[in-house]
Amino acid sequence: MSEQLLEEKHDSAARILRDLRRVVVAFSAGVDSTLVLKIALDTLGQGNVLAVTGRSASVPQSELGEAAKLAGCLGAEHVLIDTSEFENADYLVNPTNRCYFCKTTLYEHLDRLAGERGFQAIVNGTNADDLGDHRPGLLAASEHGVRSPLAESGFSKGDVRELSRRLGLPTHDKPAGPCLSSRVQYGEEITPEKLRRIEAAESYLKSLGIRECRVRHHHNLARIEISPESFPLCVDAAVAPKIDAYFRSIGYAYVTLDLRGFRSGSMNEVLIEVRRPKSVG
Image 1 (cartoon, one colour):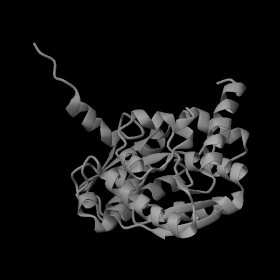
Image 2 (tube, helix red, strand yellow):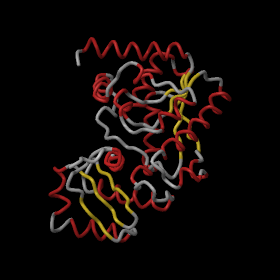
Image 3 (cartoon, helix red, strand yellow):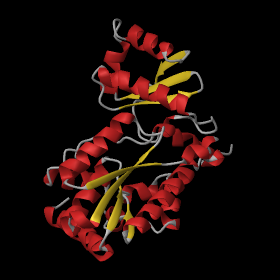
């Protein structure tokens, strides 16, 4: 993308935020919401921006610490709020629109906080690429009037990373980190115990030097997704037994390596298969 076009998108996002005047940023410390927070601070000033991170069993503890640290580095006031999605039976049964119930809970809390603190709007880090994916949380955002400056300004994920790099943000190359519940196959109940198991499994893989990974949870089977470049490490005669032993020690009976490699949103592939019409003849 040309520097001019990227700057035009940057200016557009700043105009949207300027019109909103005082904003609560739904802040996950990911690349998207960090860029929104940075633009909001630059445009509105510290006193008109509040970064808020939801705290629950579905968020890795390491990410909560990262959010607080990053917000502090940017000079933003940061608040952790306890969300209540685990009190919602519709969320716990893990339907294909699970994210709708999670985001509804989050935005209800943010609505209440914004009202108490005198903020005019809530903004999130949704980008234009997200609009074409299976993201039930977007409906919850729409229902609560949440604005998406990046998506509204036409930012792709690549644009977000490039502008973040130019602005010197440490998240510019940070891997995506969706909530832990996204690792559990649809239809299997979500529990804090399962999410702690997933978090522990992914932390172990990262300790081996694997930067981006997912441990997909299928009852008592763990399906590891990593980039093909990391396959040799995981199947190494000295390493593979250690991975297997650790995963078994935290409760998995079977440990598999997905030969298709890491891909974001792979749990949604079953939805695509269901919707795809069968060939005739």
